[in-house]
Image (cartoon, rainbow, N blue to C red; front, side, top):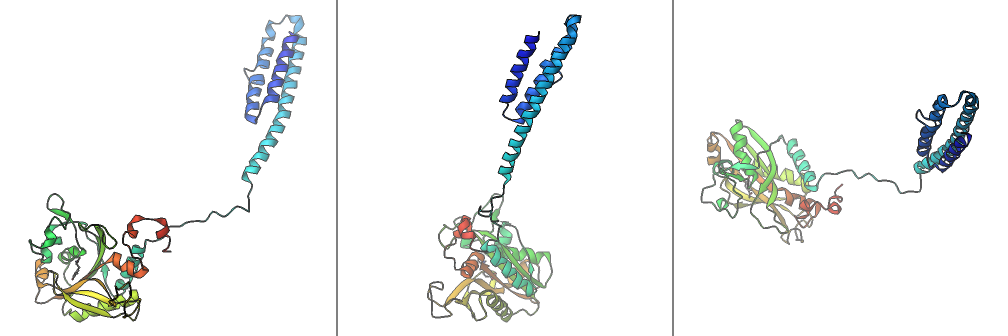
Length: 340
Ligand code: DAH
């Protein structure tokens, strides 16, 4: 019996010294001294030991238990110290490491230009309004006095959807929506995404953005249009820029024109940005056609208005000297990070 106890102690002591971690050691402890541990069971088996051998047997088992517990405690102290120093090493602050820089997001260049534009127009008393990108023929064409045989109606130019719907081709589509929803006076700025069947190149994309302005009230004249646009250009591109409006045709305005400002980079003699003309064209404008006012139930004898629509991509390209429109949509971090 004594030899059996000795062998068990020797085996347990071997396992204790082989334990590589406190967790492994706890496992040995459980198997030796736990409720169903080998030494515990040995003590419970005392009833089977002949009565005269019991005192000696009990003493031997208790001695073995004490020996094993002591070995476990010693080993635990060593393992705990080793584990603590490993953890400390892991957590140690290495002040020579390069810092982890934060990389906060930043507004897209187009969002920045739009924000700036909205600020300028809000300052002039305008309200910002948005319309749907999926439009009806009525709002995108008919209400705007665009006849059914106009080229924009062609499948080659417009993305038509089922049920007479389409992807709006211009933000002018919000004009009639705004006027139908309220009586004059109207003074709104309508930014938004537009779609056309254009092949993609450095200056064209099938999906682009425009900003529409519409003002309707009694006594609104062409002078109001010129003053408003010039004020905007000067705040956006510099106090010295001049305004140029040349006659052009858009079905929803009469008279209509195209809008340019004097090149903010060369101020006249010509440079690559203004294609050596001294002028930069930004979009169309005009006095709201009486038919458009009548289409929404406004009294065209009493009210007049002006409207204009500018390309947002083009405004941002000019503001930041960007020469390829595709850069706006590629989301290349090296491009985006330049606008902080
Ligand atoms: N919607 C026109 C376009 O996409 C631009 C435009 C021209 C808007 C004249 C207007 C305007 O409001 O009066 O080409």
